[in-house]
Length: 342
Image (cartoon, rainbow, N blue to C red; front, side, top):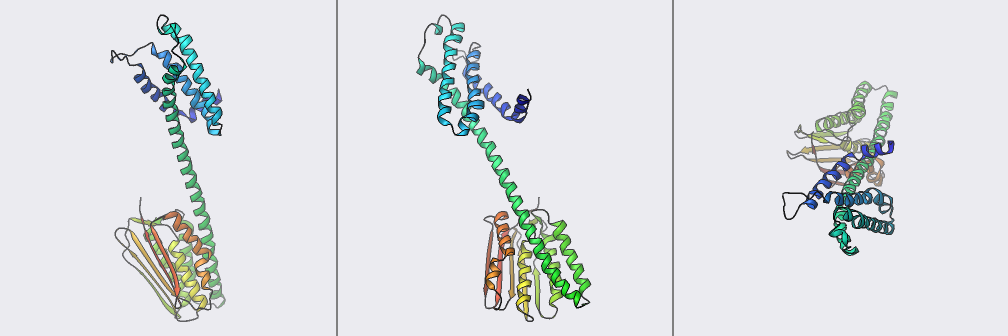
C-alpha cells in the first residue's frame, strides 16, 4: 500500500497528464462517424482494453526492459501483450457486445494489430517525451549542482591565497614597527569582510566589487610608499549590473605581487576599468616586472588558472581575456558582458 501511495505521490503530475491524454484520445476514438455529436458507449470497454495495454507497456515494460537495455525482450513482451489484448477483444468483448456481427468471425491478426498499434504508439510516444523531459531537467539540475560545487571550490582556493600573501606583508611591517601598520590592518579588515561576507553569491553588485578593488589597491599602495606609481581609474559605474566576485581582484593582486617581488623601486601598476551603458566591462591592468622572475608562472599560477576557469563557467562566450608580457610589462586585457541585476 505504501509503495502504491509513494508511486502516486511521486508521479502525480505525469499521471494527471496521462489521464487527460486518455480522455482526449477516447473522444477521438469514440465518435460516431454517422452522428458526430454522439459517442458510441459500446466503445468504452474496447478502449479500456487498449488503455490498460498501453499503461502496462508504459509503466512496466518500459522501466523493466527497455530502459535497462533489454530491447529485444521489450519487443517480444509488447507483442505478446498485444496478442493478449487482441484475444480479449475478439473472443470476449466482441462476443458480449457484438454477438451477431463482429463477434461471429475473426478479421485476422494483421487487421487487429493495425487497430491496436496506433493507440500503443501514441501513449508510448507521449511517455517517451515525458521521460526525456524529466531526464533533461535532472541533468540540468546535476550540472548546476556540479557547477556550484566547482565554483565554491575555486573560491575556497582564492581566499587563502589572498590572505597568506597579505599576512606575510603585514608581518614584515609589524616587525619594523611601521606607523602605517594600523592603517594596513583596517584596510585588510575591510577587504576580508567583503570576501567573507559580501561575496558568497556567484554574482554581486558591480559597485561593491569596484569598491573592494579600490580598498585592495589602497591596502597594497600603503606598502609600496614612494617606490612606484600606482594608478586606479574607473569610469561611471551603472547601478543595475552585477559581476562575479573576486575575478578582477586576482589580476590586480598578481600585478602587485609580481611587481613588488621583482623590483625594489620604479614600480608601476596602472588599472583602468571602463563600463558602457550596455553593460560591457573592459578591464586593463599593466604592471612592471623585471626578467629575473619566472614569467612563465605569471600565466600559469593557481590564481590565474582558477580565474580562467571561473570565467569559462560564468561567462561562456561573453568574455575575452588576453594576457601578455613583453618589454618588462605584464598586460591583462579582459572584456566581458555584465549581467543585469535581478
